[in-house]
Length: 84
Image (cartoon, rainbow, N blue to C red; front, side, top):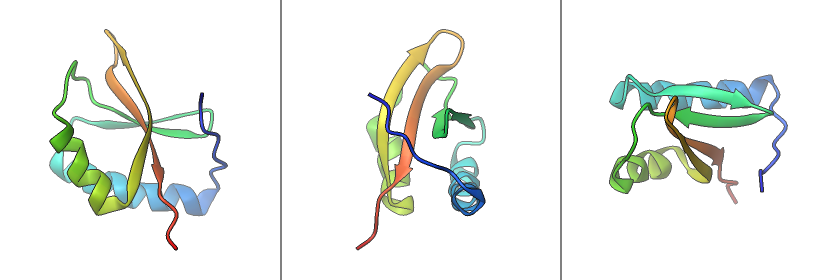
């Protein structure tokens, strides 16, 4: 099941800041946007969760889905957690 989020210009700007942080650590990772879903494409066939955990905590994110293909490597969807 895919989580649908409506991305307006402000949302894209928030994710731009997140991806700037991610690219400082992992310059070969890329952003994918598919059907209003923000995803990270890693070009790797496996990752240690500790690599992702720091990013999730720092940027207040959660993983929405994970997939793998020979062409893309690991791809995982991200979404900002709501702050209370």
